[in-house]
Length: 477
Image (cartoon, rainbow, N blue to C red; front, side):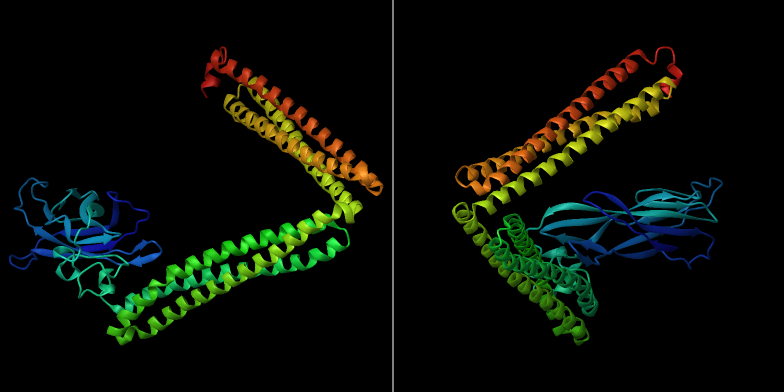
């Protein structure tokens, strides 16, 4: 008899999964020389919440020899699963699960039902071994009776309070060797430290970007380049937001790594062989904490720089109408032009989508004419989405046009009292008008796409309703 381990992924409560296969040869033996039972210890590698656990479960097989007769089925010896449920249970997050084993599919010379596996005389056969975790319910007192690893149960949990008093943590999560258990902590600790380090680097980059923008904005404001100053102000805010997000992430990684310190320390105190691994785990956990602290420092500095840039921007916008109206008008004119360019891009999107809808409709009609209805349907399915996206592009273009007009109105208001702002106001109004024209053109393209979609839908619905009018075989295909 031989057992071969298998693999599985993404299992849930009550789901049957393969743990491997067993091969059994039903041969002839001398009386009194055979085995009556075989014990099978099943060790599983489980990845639960970024931790690797190795619970093990024990089962006993009885080997039953039958009397050989002319009936090969009745003469087939069999392996009997004495108890399909392991005496060891698994506990995680306060819920207890039992592990159940059963025989599955067999090769040609064997047959099975859930607790027995028969093999034809003088033949060998293989059978799949399937396992299932069944939820028993919440654990009220995990320290009593069969839930103790020492008394036959198994506990998987990061909470040291769960389990019997003399049950150290590495036993609770399925390891008999403390050195192996502490070693299992090193890889997840390294990953968390590396994740915290990566977040720290991003946070530091955010700090540097915010500081640079905070410094550069003053020079742009002094020179009257409000448009570039606004970009720097917004860049500083974005950099600070990014730094804070990454600081939060780094702190979460460090917090997740913290339990590894005590988990590595306790087994190392009981077994000096685990000391080296425990030191390495401690180094990685401490590194994660250091990276998190530095990321938070960077985020705090980035926010301070962004606040400085925001203050400079707001002060300039309050003072400019009286101190530098021409520069402020130039800013609004620049904004009007940017929004106009964005409206033009949205119009081009609508135009391209309308063209795509027209091309798809033409191909649909051509395929219908050739009796290629499957291909025709694939082209039809492209038309309506294109029309819908063209309509979305209209809304985008209209939004940009509105913002362009708002900027032009601000420039015009300045020009009323400040003659030097008149040229900039005229330019802003020209761009706002162009933006509004782009929005109108986008609407026309979307209307064209909608019309194409309506005609194509009518054509396709009529075709489906008519059953292809005498070309049923091609339509069915």
